[in-house]
Amino acid sequence: MPHIQNQTGYEVEAAWVIADFDNNNTFFTDSNGLQMQKRILNYRPTWDIKKNYNDSNENITANYYPVNSAVQMRDLKQNKIFTVMNDRSQAGSALEAGQI
Image (tube, rainbow, N blue to C red; front, side, top):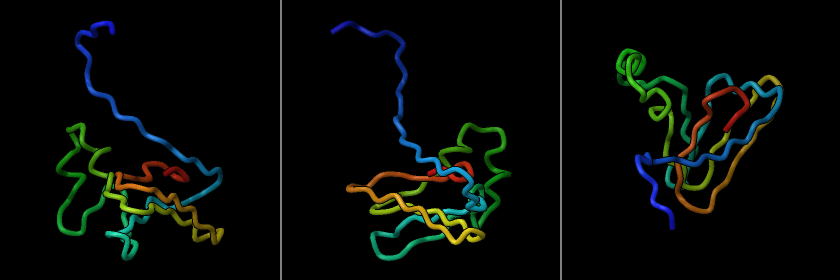
C-alpha cells in the first residue's frame, strides 16, 4: 500500500436532491425513533447561533443533527413530504432547499 503524506480526514455524504421542493429552511429528525423534531437552519431557541459562528468554519456542522431512523423535509405549498430512512445512527441535515 502506498504511503500518503499530509493527508487530512475526509467525510463522505450522500445528498438526495428533489427538484422544485421548498422546505423553507426547515427539516425534521427523529428523536430516538420516537417523534420527529423540527430543525431550522442556523437557529437555536436558546442562543444566537449566527452571532457565534459568523467567523468560524462550523456553520455547516452546526446544522447537522443525530438521525437514528429518519430525516424528513416537507414542502407545505405542494403538500409533499420526502423522508430518508437509515438502518443505523448517522447525522443529517438539509442545508439547501430540496436537499437532504
